[in-house]
Amino acid sequence: MKTNERERLRLARKKRVKLKVQKQSGRPRLTVFRSAKHIYAQIVDDNEGKTLVAMSTLSKDFKGQMATGGNLKAAALVGSLIGETASEKGIKEVYYDRNGFLYAGRVKALADAVREKGIKF
Image 1 (cartoon, rainbow, N blue to C red):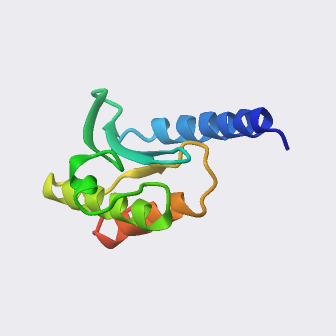
Image 2: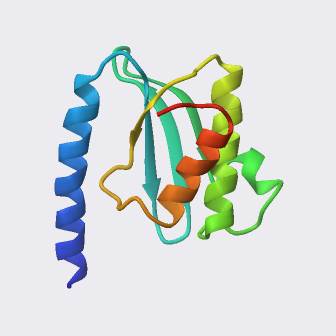
């Protein structure tokens, strides 16, 4: 399958998931984006249009603990960091927006690490 076809399918999945998640306006949304070298996660309040918590493999907190950002360990570390920060800010439940990416590999590792920190979704 060609790369542009994969991207088109991912964007279609992204649109479907985002519409379902945004209809549920009671909780903030944990959205994830991954590239070949990095992974990004942020908790967004769609009602106010504000980012409550953001963490990535480019963050200062991450850089002090790990050098590379494109593997499972890095995704799990980003997940645990965003989980800790969210629980400190009093966020208990979120909707998980995987942004059209398949729920496997780094996306799953990040989600599992956030769940371990007590955030429910």
